[in-house]
Figure 1 (cartoon, helix red, strand yellow):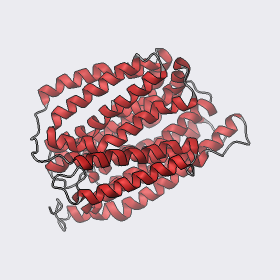
Figure 2 (figure 1 turned 120 degrees about the horizontal axis):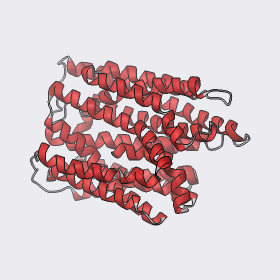
Figure 3 (figure 1 turned 45 degrees about the vertical axis):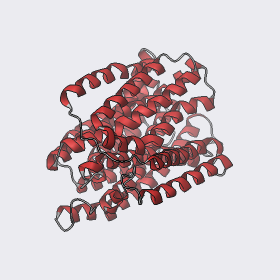
Length: 447
């Protein structure tokens, strides 16, 4: 539900703009308000579940997300929609890490690996399926339906959670208020600077001040967290090379993937003349392959699959980046999508597993928060960098030629991000995972 909403917005933006009569700046904040709040609150929300109880916080997050979705679907004006998207970001910041933390708590050993593989498969399929669902609902009903569909889902899961989930133990002690403020403001400032960069440029005072402020706050957060008893961000999570590598690789991988979804949607609609529904259907080859591969991963998940999946995604992205005006959808878009879908299906499960490998139950929420923070920060950073990279390309061309030139440049940048991600996987994650599984190193970091 959370990731579907991330991709639904791509196919619905033109209809939202015309329906609410939004300016380009206001339209950008329909997505940016969600991204800013979601990314800014992730570290705080993920640690809060360890302290107040994960089932309780999970249900609160679902209630916030469902209520905000209702408000978005009923939005009479742009300011209402932007405010409701910010509230939806609060719910997403709670639900995303808490759901992964609950899985980490409920399962152990090989069962945990399989459960996380299913979790990651749902995330990968949800991202691409959102484009299809969003396109269909926007064309057949309204963009509002793409958000209103969350309401019955949220209500059903809240009711179901009472039956199938038990509350996790609550931790006693003092709440890290300084860490909470530092994490929220630091992440918020960094993400604000990133999402402002495509509009004002990386050299603008607003972007540079935001990024500098965020960096200072996050450095201060690290210094502070090493001194408190119950930190928002336990620094011991970074002692594992496998986990640290997983956070880095996830940031790079998601930076490339958000560019793939964002710019390929533009390619299909503006370059090939597809409608929103046709654009959603255009991602079907990727969605189907992703689904089939994801069904296999729970039985196969390991670090070799992560390397293979990252390499396949890289191959598909590099192929698609060579798009030209004379190319066809079937050969030059659908076939690369199959490689990207297979790669994402293989990579997401092992990458998520590596991000929480060997974590104590007490730190499951914080580790899940770091996984989701890398995910969200990677999307914000990747989109900001790729939009800036492609901003001045295609300006001397017209029509589809300008679009393909613009998209090709952006996807070339995404290819570079995946090259770096593959290097991190092969040189950091794979050796560390094999070292851990061989018994040469403890599964859990020393306290």
